Length: 386
Length: 187
Image 1 (spheres, rainbow over the protein chains, first blue to last red):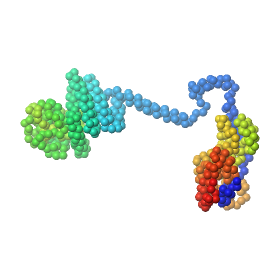
Image 2 (cartoon, chains in turn orange, green; image 1 turned 180 degrees about the vertical axis):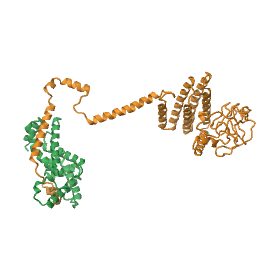
Image 3 (tube, each protein chain N blue to C red; image 1 turned 60 degrees about the horizontal axis):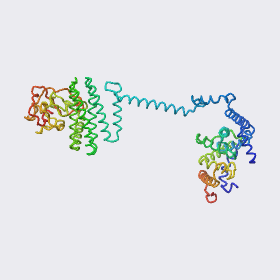
Image 4 (cartoon, each protein chain N blue to C red; image 1 turned 90 degrees about the vertical axis):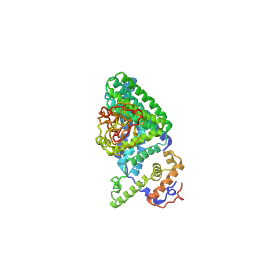
């Protein structure tokens, strides 16, 4: 078919400019032919085995199969194999380390890995319910670790105790973010677990663990968190509100005080020598109570309201706890114990991170030890703070 | 080529017979070289294309996948694929006077330059086509093949070849800024 039918002359002319091609160099053509024949000869050699190889071919095949001998090694396969090896070493080795760390105790080197793996699992939790369950599971681990240490007569470190507390609080907070029905269900489970843990501690205490103070502190902390849970079981909304207020207050304090030292001085205007970090309900006999402050710091210390209510403690103080107002400007409630200006105990691990309105605590002070008829009294927040 | 003669040649080549292989090379390598030279404009690349084309042919024979007929179409298809890969690997060469034009040695330098410039323009225009379109245009208008031969080489129906040619020419018209004559040159 003539080309002119398919294409206009102008375009054909342009394409025809490529028609003129110089002749091929005959020498190169000869060389090309020789190379072609040589390559064909190489194929012939490759296809037909050597005479001796024909008789021992089965040995070669077996050796190739067992020892993976290859005439040519593929760079891609080598690279992939290297990547796979490194990946398996990293992941497999890391996984083995994490698995081994799961049974480690606080005094063992892999304990940090265990905590890190827990943090990662909590961080990856998809929803608050899962987060709460994980936090409660890990709190159970802390409880077991603490119990083991106490049975050995070793006082658990503050770091372990703090982690125990923070994981319980995280569980409660996560549960509070759920719907009322789900929250109550989870809180009920938490209550059972915490009660079991409290019971375990009680047994340890009865068995005569030397670390009495630590046991007491942990039991106190558990009691406080159980009170949160009780609040939540009764009214989840109230628990949420309390948690929100608590968080707000902590944020305020953190904004005001960049470090913990000034925090203590600002939040405890009562300047009593008590425990400035206490936030929870005082333990009987702990000497927890208000100091001599004047309550002038409105931002951080509620003024005496005549009711003596402590927003952080919803329960009734235990008789003999010495819990009550100090010698501040607030009126003295006959139902409260004599306020003490004596020095309180050192900050407990539960209270290290929670500077609040707590005032100095009369313990064995001159005026603060006499338990009054405060069994039914509500703690006051006068001048000095509870 | 006589089909019987071609079959005989193919069988000899499959047996890696030297004389058959040499005959195949001598018969088809010049055409492959010209084809590559037209599209690449570089004699070294064209020689590489020839060598690689025949090397792939040998490998196909060894694998038992060599052609049973239409050896020329088969070899052109290999060469075309190699050139397409070459286009992908390399940017368009710069416009320069090529030393591989001995017949132009007596021509005036400006004439050689114009000729080289025009050839380079056409090569660049062919690069704008799809590989299939380029193959159709090359075989049809540079090598002078008929539709049925191109269809065999590309393993496509003749209608498809016509459609490919139609679209290729339209693209070339746009590239060369020629007026399109779609009615008169429709497939």
